Amino acid sequence: ITTFCAPPTMYRFFIKEDLSKYDLSSIEYSTTAGEALNPEVYEQWKRATGFSIYEGFGQTETTLSIYNPVGSVPKSGSMGIPSPLYDVDLILPDGTPAPVGETGEIVIRTDKHTPCGLFMGYSGDTAWRDEDGYFFYVGRTDDVIKSSGYRIGPFEIESVIMELPYVLECAVTSAPDPIRGQVVKASIVLTKGTQKRFRPTSRRTPHRTNTRVSLSSAMSCRRPSAVKSAA
Image (cartoon, rainbow, N blue to C red; front, side):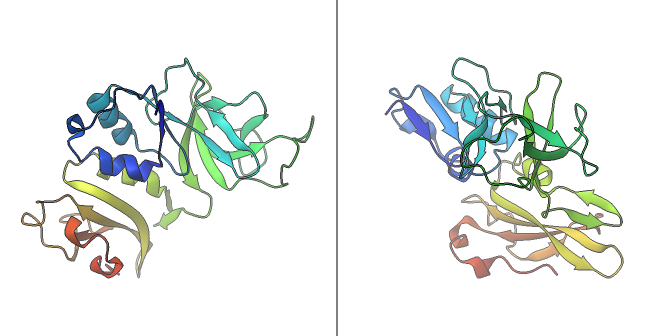
């Protein structure tokens, strides 16, 4: 095996293990796709194995439309650059191209030509790009939490939570709130051995009444009912 490909969820589990116990000598490349890759997962995997993770983005009918070419140096948290096969752009709600650093919806322009097999319409995914043309995933257009008028992207919060060494997995969603409309809710699975430090139950975080947290131990992560609702 020279190329190891797995979704980010698998990498999140791997970095919590002792990777020195495994023989990875035949691997030349680590790749991922299918969901957004947290920067912290990228950094920990690289520290543990020496491999950068080559991330990519695409749809069923396009395969990779944004990628990290062989020979390039991936940027932590970035999906890469547009494939030469597609005219990829970021579009604001008013239909104009998104400036550098500003979030827009990922689209494949068809004004010059339409790639074979491509469906019509926008992707529904949002990202921003830096001055070098690298794309950074933000989230789905229909996956935005609106709290007190603020638009909050769940993936950015999940990436921060994943930096905690005792977090195995997490998911950020919204919960109804009578004052703010919605508040941020984080459902967290703790690593093995951490359950003694935390009580696996739902609670509000201290001094942050606009955020709710649900905790579950790794031993019960296979049972969806183990994470109680914080609503």
